[in-house]
Amino acid sequence: MSHTPTTAASLTARAATVIARCRELARITDVPGETTRLFLSPATRDAHTLLSWWFRQAGLEVRTDAVGNLRATRHSPHANAPTLVLFSHIDTVPNAGAFDGPLGVLVSLAAIEQLSATPLPFHIELIAFAEEEGVRFGFPFLSSLAVTGQLTPEHLARTDADGISVSEAITAFGLDPANIPTTCSLPPRTFAALEIHIEQGPILDKSDSALAVVEVIVGQSRLEITFHGHANHAGTTPMSLRSDALAAAAQWIVDVEHYAANYTQLVATVGRITTLPGAVNIVPGTVRATLDVRHPKDESRHAAVAHLLTKAEAAGTLRGVRVHAAVQSEQRAVPMDRDLTHHLRQAAARAGYDANPIFSGAGHDAMILAAAVPTTMLFLRSPGGLSHHPDEDVRPEDVEAALATLVNLLLHLHPRP
Ligand SMILES: [Zn+2]
Image (cartoon, rainbow, N blue to C red; front, top):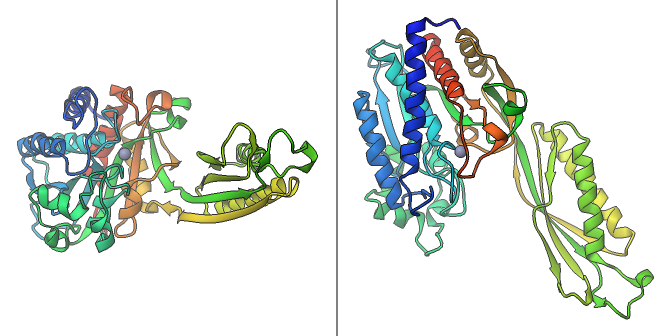
C-alpha cells in the first residue's frame, strides 16, 4: 500500500461506515421485512431524509431535482471550476440486497468525507438517482435520461401497476414535472462522470480481485422467435407426419446454448417460451421464444444473432416448421471514456490495487451518461457473484479498495480544458 498507516486506518473505518450505512438504508423499504424501494415511493422519501442528513453532515449542499434525484454538491474554491459527477441509484428491485446502487452513492460520500477541506480544482456533484431498475414503470434509466435531456413525454406518460403515470408520481412526490428541463440537467461544465457499482457477476470473485474498471457496457439484442408448425392429435398423428414447433424450438435452444458457450465473451439466453395450444394431448403448433444476445462488440453480436437465426431455420426445416423472427430491441455497446478509465485504473494502482479492465454484461446509468459526458465505472467484487438477492454482499476490504481508489482519483484528476 502506498498510503500512510494513519490514512489506511481511517479508510478501513470509513469502509465499515459505508457498509453500515448501506445496511441502514436497506431497512428503508416499501415492503416490510425485505428491501424493496421503488421510484418516488414513500420509502424513497425516507431514504432522501436519511441521505440528506448524511450529505449535510459532510458539508454538502443538497437539493432534489424535478424527477426526484437527490443531488449534493461540494464546491471548489474556484467558483467557475468545472464539475465532476459521482453517481449511482437508490431504487431497488423487489426483495433486493443492500448494495446494488446505494454502495456507489455511499462510497462516493465517504471519499468526499475523507477529502475533508482539501481544495480541489473542480466541484463535485454526487447524484443519487431515484430510478434505474425500471421496476415501477417497466422502463429503466428514467433518472439518467432526465439528467441527459432525453426524457420524453412518452416516458412521462408511462403508468405503473395502479395506472399512475410518471408525471403524476412526480407531482404526488411534491415535485413539478414542468421543472425537469431547468432542474435536472448536468451542472454546466461537467467534465467527467463516475459510477461505482458492485459487479453483480462472478468474474472478480473467480479471479480473486477486489476491483475492475469497466471498458465497455455490452450491447444487447432482444428478439422474439416464432416457430409455426401444425397442431394435431397427439395420438393419431404418426411421428413422421408431424410439424412439432416445440421440438424444433427445443433443438434450437440447445443450439443457442452450445454456440454461445463456444464463442468468446458471448452470452445468449432463451428466457421464456410459450407453447400453443399447450395441451398434453396436442402436438405443439406454435412456439414463441425470446432470445437475448449480448457481446461487447456490436459486429460480433450481430453476427451471432444472424447465425442463431439460421440455426432456428435449420431446426424448423427438419420438421416442416416455419420460423419468424422479430427484433424487439437493440442496444449498442457503449464504451466507457478511454482516458477517464485509464486515470481510474492508475488511481487504483497508486492506492495499491489492480483494477483490470472488464466489460459489464448488465446495463447501467453510466451508458446513458456516456452519451453526454466522459463517463466510466469502477466495479467491486460481488462475493459469490450474487446480486438482485437479499444475500447480496460486499467485502469490507474491497470497499476500502474502492474508497482508496476514488480518493486517489479525486486528488490527482485534472479537469480537461
Ligand atoms: Zn444497480
